[in-house]
Every structure is written in C-alpha cells, then in structure tokens.
Image (cartoon, rainbow, N blue to C red):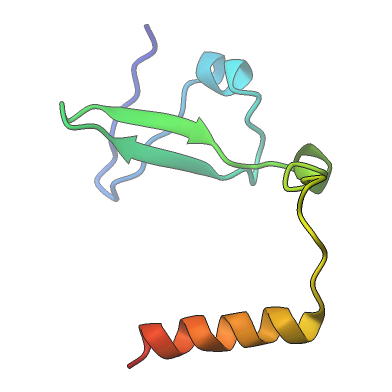
Length: 82
C-alpha cells in the first residue's frame, strides 16, 4: 500500500510506484472521483489524440453538413439559455 501526505496547501505527491503503475508523467492530468463511501478514486485522463482516434466512428451513422450541426447546437443552446 502506498501512503501520501497532504500538505498545508492541500497538495499531495502521488507515490512513484503508483505513478509508474498508472503510467503518469509530468504534466499528465488525473481525475479524482469521490464515491458514496467517501473513498477517492484516481484515474489518469491524459490521453493522446491517437488513443481516441476512431472511437466515435459508427458505420450506421449518416454524415451531416456543418450547417445541420450548427443548427442543432443553436437549438440546444436556446433550450439551455432560456
């Protein structure tokens, strides 16, 4: 088990063994999620574009024009900012 200490500024250094295991490097971003049991889960969110490439591609999805996309955004924003 790795232990870290909270500083007076609220900062924590993630122990090296955890950084290595999560493949974290300087400048990487992490997400901290608090569970209902008051536990904190640390997840790396520093993904490269190449990691996400093709994830949203769906063969059954039909392409739409930029104009259609713009109109959808406009309509959504109208609903949100009433």
